[in-house]
View 1 (cartoon, protein in one colour):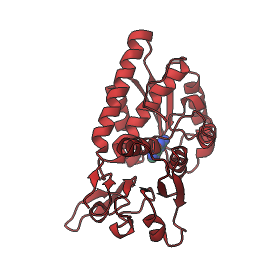
View 2 (cartoon, protein in one colour):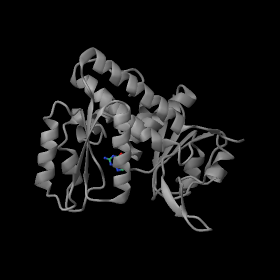
View 3 (cartoon, protein in one colour):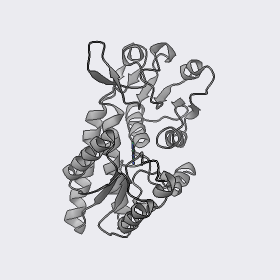
Length: 297
Ligand code: GUN
């Protein structure tokens, strides 16, 4: 079997189009422009690339992009003061503090100081608890984008066996909650899982989020399964230079799977699209307006 390629780039463009439409409607009918504040502490090169890309796409869908770039030595008190200011700014509907933070800052404390209603990453403990109990919340962007692609490909996920590889708070755990919410039978596997290959071979849906380049190979995949590859790893090419690969070995997995997301061009573009969707959702909720259809769970 040769897998259907799930085109995350095209899907993300469609989601951004829906967001742009929602933003235009808000502005025309209510005079409201959704605002997304992104806070970057320090100069981590990968984070700088993400933040630039977020700013550009925020502006492209017609939202206001507010960037705060802080010195690497910024104190916790100063960062918390900025978040307090953003929490109280009615023009800011979404707040994202780029992770990882420098070591001297307590990430949990910082994230939990964001107003949960503006927590467009869905990382605040209130949102984690709401998601875990099946209540309306802000949903983390990468799992949300992955779920959108799965629903689009399969329709209903009810009764499917899903194996999530990776137990991070950003991807693995919320992904498992979302799949459970869609009535999958969910296993969370991780680096200590015994006979990981055999566990993955049971899966109708595999979500790989471990950060290990090309770890999952085709012989781990049940024929016809759907593979969502969340990994983004840069590896050296044999003839010099580098290239991006996922946590799955694309060629061998695509030969066995029923459907697969490529890297790049799979989950990655969906993450930013869902950040914009969450910002629009947060803005609608803040103003007591109906949320646009299909942009959240
Ligand atoms: N760093 C890597 N991914 C993310 C993300 O989704 N949100 C935030 N805030 N930081 C990140």
